[in-house]
Amino acid sequence: MMLIRQPYYATRQTARPAAAYEPAERVYRLPVDAYATDETVVLTAPVPGMSLEDLEITVDDDELIIRGEINGEEEGVNYLLRERFHGKFERRLRINIPVDVNAAEATYENGVLRLVLPKAEEARPHRIAVNVAH
Image (tube, rainbow, N blue to C red; front, side, top):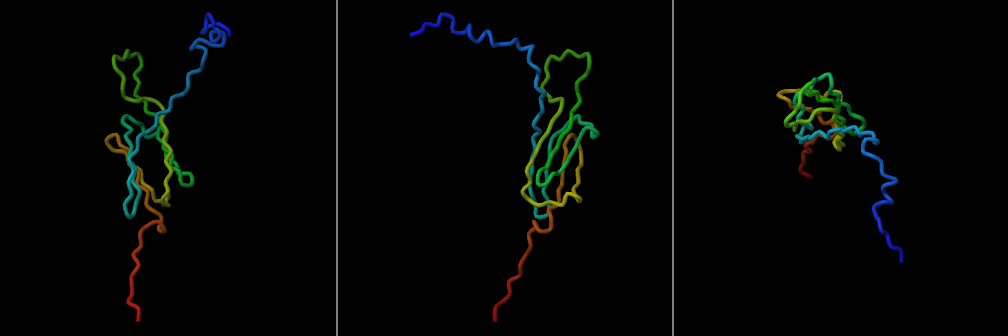
């Protein structure tokens, strides 16, 4: 049986100071609400303080991608409390309903992004008339 007198010494040789590591780029996961009507898929997301030039919305196959950057950091300010998010964000959502991307509308009002994606014709409900059999 081997007695380890300094159990943490072995890990000290492989450990590096935290400053030696590159900081990972933080990407915020944008919260999104989504619902469907008979005609559309609607998504809303809070992006207060956002400049529209820093916002990008794309659709790739059935994946909606919302990415951008919220700038709100003031230079030379020593924050006492900092809770609001500032920086890059990205959200990828799989849309399992066929939509007409060419007719999509995006609006920004009171800090909320709203996307309205019309459903493709084949995804919309269709009424089938029932006839009396003779």
